[in-house]
Image 1: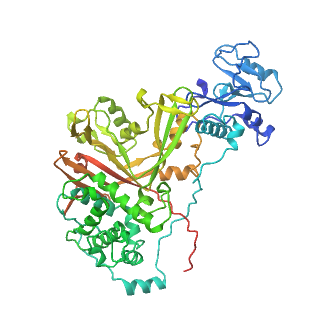
Image 2 (image 1 turned 180 degrees about the vertical axis):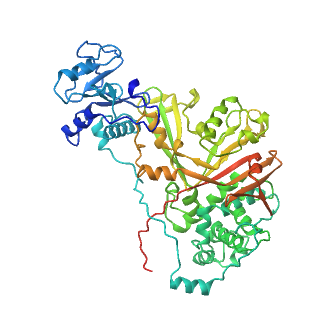
Image 3 (image 1 turned 30 degrees about the vertical axis):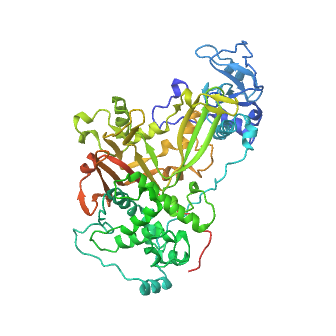
Length: 598
């Protein structure tokens, strides 16, 4: 881009090129049809280029040079000309010598449009979308489909149904529902005391080194989608037990089977969660004892059934797995947890991670997708290099744990959640001992790996790796470094769409190669998250204590087993965050296909 048209502010956008508009109007709806069979994708990095033959060496038609800084092919007549400012421009001379319509050319090495009359790059949305589609297809299929025409007709990935946004309408009971509510339920008692805690905030008794369980349960009890699911009676424990042939007396059996020989009926963590939600939101303020839930979880995770201190993150994963496993057995039908439609646990917490491993020799990229219910992050190295990340995020995020509230010795090299996410999604060169088998080279090659997030869950859980275990030194330790985490978090930079767009160049279009985003506005809205719970760990590796901080109505509350206290934000800043829970600011409601008459 020339200095005269350089963009200095976001508001000073360049004017559209009149020659490009004239070229499009003159050549109909498909002005770049001639370039379809000439577009090639070459390694490394999947860069696009224009070649009539794969081994062709383009040369300027006027001077015969092939090593000039820029070579452009006329879209109208395919004549190749050079452009090397401040010297003479043979591309501009070609446009001047020809009839109107030869002003638009394409960079043969970058597949970018160029106006020879304006002597500047130009942008065409349809052209860039087609180029990126060809790049993605070539990378995914190992270069077997590198032309633009084959890319356009390639198969679209599965599970890419367009999401339809529907307006949110608050629920109001009709006449029949009012009768059912009056006959089958009793209204909750309301309190007029201004000093009362928010509704549903109730302490949990420690049953013997069970602070790990209480801390995670407090976060789950106040997870908005999960809370709304159970409080709206979407999982009724009485109906579930009746459907599975279990009676109230069956739950008291210690054996693995009930009276009917049904092994599944003995434990249903979702039923115990339903009972817990009913008890916690009943209005009773006395601490609640989740003994029944603990017993059910012990039956599911027999290897963790003891009164020893356990890891809160391990309990979180095990509990979600127990809910998912029970639903899978009841349905007798396989469901993919990555789709988020198999059970309430994965509807709320399930996302999809994308892993790209690129061969450093030929550029072939192997892409895999893995479902996840949380993201485990390494803390940044304790160096001053992370100061740049902290200063950058301070202007765009409202952080908890700002450096002004920390001790002077901690202000240098403090880790940030955004820095940890940058570290998680940046390209990583795998060592020689981790060579992967390249399908195109048919041999093991060194590779470059990059992680990204293809699908965001409704609730994102970030697990900070504070416990390190070394098999070489045969020792374990806890990392006590402080972590800054924002109240509002934008996950857009870590999405696969953003990662792919940055990898394929500065192509400003809402396109990620996967087609799983309906439009830019919905993607932008769903990438904004809000913090509502922080699980912290204080103490040493073998002798520590878990505490949860909940953010309700813009006020922080400390949940320390049976004790609930209101705290200031500075207290949360000083705590060592172990698990952070973020919920989407904008939730999308799926339109119901089965309309029920009122």
